[in-house]
Structures are given as C-alpha cells and as structure tokens.
Amino acid sequence: MSTETKTESAPRRRTVAVVAPYYPPGIGGVEHYSSRVAGAVAAAPDLRAVVITTRADGLRTTVTDEDGVRVVRLGAWLKLSNTPLSPLWPLQLRRWLRRLDVDVVNAHAPVPGLGDLAVAFSGSRPAVFTYHSGTMHKGEKDSGLADRLIGFYERTVLPRVFARARRLVAVSPVSLADGHAKAVRITPGVDTGLFTPGVPASQRAKTVVFVGRMSRSSAWKGVDVLIRAFALLVDEVPEARLKLVGDGDAVPDLLALADQLGVADRVETTGSLGGERLADAVRTASVLALPSLTDAESFGMTLIEGMACATPVVGSEAGGIPLVVDDGETGFLVPPGDPAALATACGKLLTDGELADRMGAAGRQAAEQRYAWPALTERYLELFRSV
Image 1 (cartoon, rainbow, N blue to C red):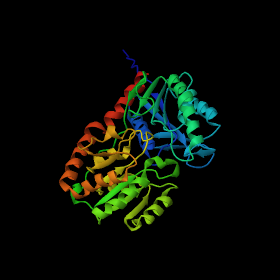
Image 2: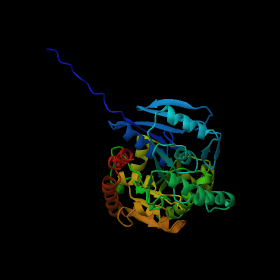
Image 3: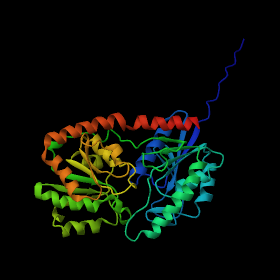
Image 4: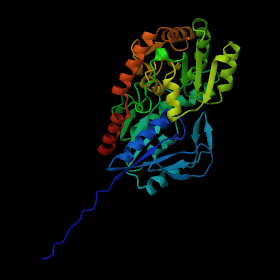
C-alpha cells in the first residue's frame, strides 16, 4: 500500500516597503532609523523587506541588493533646503510598489516629499507613516518665505497625510504625529553592541564632541552657539578641545567663527564618520553636546549614542531633547542659545571627574534599558503584522 505525502506550501511572506528620502550609506538619524526597521523586517521569518529611497545624485533609478534587502533609489531632480524632490515620484512609486509586490508601506518623513507621496499613492495597501519632525519652521533671518511654505504644509497637507495613513508613529513627544488617535510612539534606538563604553570619562582627553549635520539650512543645530561656548570654556579648561563630526556647507563659516574667537587651533573637524570610527569618536570624548535651538530637533539620536558610550551629555531644552536627557542624572540641560550656560555645564563635566563618571554610568544604563534597538524594532514588526 502506497502512501502519498502531502506537503503544504509555506505561507506567503508579507512584503513591507520602507520608504524614506534618506538611507545609508548616508549618515544621519533618519538613515539609521529606517535601516534598522528594514533590517528587522528582513530578519523576521514571516516578513520581507524592500526599501524605496532617493539617490544622493543622478536622475536614473538604481536597484541594488544590500544585506539581503532590495533597495530602489529614485533619482531627484533638485534639492530644496536639503529636501530631495522629483515630479516623477508619483508614477515611480505606483510602479515600484506594484512591481515589488508590496503589502504594507512604512513611509518615513523628516521633510515633505517622498514619505507623503508614498502614503498618498499606497492604494489599497495599509500605510504606516513615521513622522520624525516637530515643526520645521526655521525661525531664522531671511527664512520668511520658507517658513510660510512650511506653515502651509503643516496646516494643510500634513493633516491629510495623517488621515490617509492606517497608523502613525511619532518618534518623540514633539513629533507632529504625537498624541494623534492613530499614533504610537517609537523612539530612535542605539546599537549598544557598537556604541560601548571606553575608559571612564574622567580618564579621557578633555574633548567636547558634536555629531551632526553642519549645513546653512540646519543652523537650528546651534553649532555656532557651541563654538561661542567653547571660547568661554577654554579660560577655565585650557587643555579642552572641540571635535566637530559631520559635514555640510556651513563648516567653513563655523571654522571662521572659531578663528575670530581665537580658538581655531583647538577645533577639529573630521567630516562624516560611521560605524566603529563614529563610535570611537564618541567613546573617547569627555562630553557630547547637542545645542539645538528649536523643535526641529525632535529627538537627538547622537545623545543616546553618547549615553551608550558612558559619555556624559549636554543638551538644550529644545524639541525632544528633554525626553532623552535626565537633567542632573545622565547629563545637563541648558537654555537654547545660551553660550554661557552651555560653557558652564561642559566645564562642570570636564573638571569634576566623579560627576562625569556617575553621569556616564547612568547614561549607559538608560541606553540599555530604554533605547536598545531590538525592543523598539519588535514593536514595528507587531505593527506591520496587525495592519
């Protein structure tokens, strides 16, 4: 008597498209965040990850396989204040969502553009919209027209995108999605295996480090305030050094300011760093500073990278930074745009080794308990399975 063995075909894996205007090898908060989500989806046995993003330059679409994930990079016709744009994206998004057999769209929007369009043209597919920003108002001199356009977008366009999405993710309390009925909050995370403590902060060279974009369109990062604070600090701590990690068209302006203030020989610029080189720059510093000026700083990922390295941090009381820094525990909070207060906070950590070591240890503990990536990406997987 013969027996017939029946094999059941494996259930189809749902395809999640992570759509983000910025993606590695670019270095930045959105790049790290979206790539972590894509990596977690790719590792899940019941899900499949694809990425739709933009090219740093060039008009033609490119398709590559990166770490087991299909990555489609759309060409951009222009950049407006660091925001890539193209009139072809509506057609291209429809085509690629269909060609990649996408079931769920996870769109990331730190700026208007690709993320909004991905939600608008997702069709019958459920869209999970991750909104990274607080208000994008620049509030700077000569930014009147830009602020009016941003205001129109935030008042008129963004609410319609929120209504179209099935679920919303806010990355911090100042994200414009936070508090919405559809929203959950999933903060950025940190790789606690890469960003690890070195020697205690008290035994490190007296270096203050800043990590981030230094472009004229990102003046709200407050790097000029940090340089002014550093010029005040060197009177108290003559051996202090300032390391600026990142790039952008404002770097020459910032170095000129350092020269004007007489501290150019104490300021080092490294360009953009990633991976172990970035982790080493953070773990060898005595203080990590993030002096942002507005709610455009919706979280401050570099703060949790510093905390994971047991590097005490100083941040301004702006945007989402107070969510991250426990004032007096893992670091200090100072008023935005106040060089004297920033210099005082950094000086305390550079001159009081016991305080610096205690805050560094508390920061590492907070990074492990609140910001380790696996627990955060698991919440995304549950969200994708539920929609």
